[in-house]
Image (tube, rainbow, N blue to C red; front, side, top):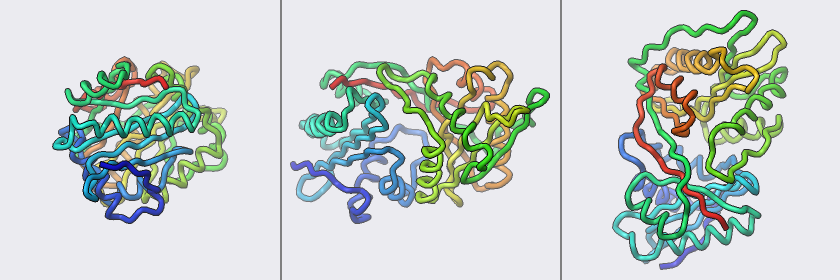
Length: 311
């Protein structure tokens, strides 16, 4: 067995499709599977300032892989998987050592990942990772969802755009996205501050991936964005995903989170009738957002446990 680093921006499609097959083989049951062409675009175009891929191979065939994404010194994430038939042979441990070294090189003090199965739990325990928060994945059947018309308080309005944020809303939208920083996260994780430049980079990456970025916001009479939700969909695909949803602290308790969700989903159903399902994920202890999702019609599909490894 050998481990080598792969540059996803230049690697042949067939190499990266091996990683896609690994993700399919290790994904939680009951959720839509990302199509191969979207996986290729995801691997090649990253939103993380640092993303490194490590492949474990035997006789030229992929048996496991690890991916490190570093968004800042206190926000690093790892995806690590081994094909079920190759587990308990030290492959995951060897990959983890490569990921540790890469994370230290990037200046990260810790990183986190998720598991959903008994095998994942056993591996996390074996390598000394500490279990942290539980995250709930949920799915909405958009075809039958009862999406009532949203309401907002007097002086507020809802607005939706596809692609790039309007220039006159860009700065306040970036500030609103920073509201994600007080959402529940694994211990030690800190979201980097979001700037207007960062927003434009995220939009550009989504476009490179062929993803339609659909943003719905709530705006007050000062033209300040105070709530947002961000849906991602590939035109023609039957599955969409919620990227983030947040309400700034000073505007909470007004029903804005539910309003942007409803408006976003209603517009998605009208514009993209081919979309059948929408997925989302929230920390189990994020009672407010989970309550909104339940009222909208999202149904839990799997619980992922976050684990933190201090370097």
